[in-house]
Image (cartoon, rainbow, N blue to C red; front, side, top):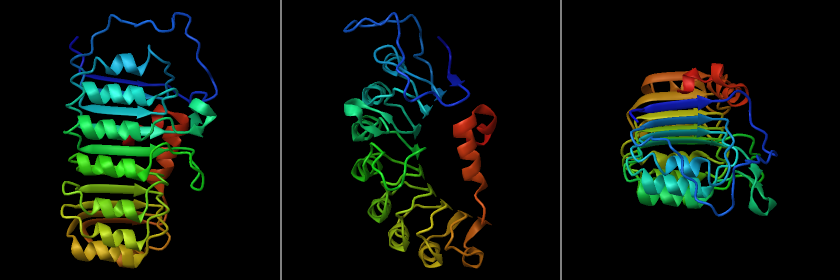
Length: 286
């Protein structure tokens, strides 16, 4: 009953084609479990499989004090799970979602969560300050992400987001960056392999009033000119560039109080290893 933090990670990715069969499941029956997590504030679940009625929906309905949630590669997750979270966890301050495509209703192959999740968070979580949305195994030219850019913009405009991380979000482009220019609380932004962002998007970002920390990894649509737009208008505390093919080391010298530049992508490689192989690669992501 006094538990404040819980973390469970399973090694290896669950089978997205596997349909778990729970022998205790009875259709249309309301399940109740004898566990107490009303004091839980920090929850991390990685590489698990959940099923209707007895999975996340039941757990999240009880986590009324939850402030930090990380869900990574959860097979079987549904919008209803996240709507339940939003309705019961108004104190939520941080959420991290790593999603990969699976077979959903109507035999669509995409990430399971849709804009219904983003809208619920926008409406019900007024204290949400840190958001990470990451996508694994989604092709850039195929509609495998259940979110839309409009849904993401709704979340950005509704919550006081201080920190935003987008990994491989091929739904995000220069119009999304325009929305970020009006995110008055945004202090830290990390964009990883967002291929549709160009210098035009960076010009929008340069008008953000609060940005202090910027990280760009594998963003090949941005050049020295785009980074320069932000640097000239913002006095950044930190700037990190990892393997952005069109951004040179010369262009970022003295661009912030702290500058890190590499033509490799060590952070991205560690993230992929964490997704594929499990716990021993994930310490840096905690």
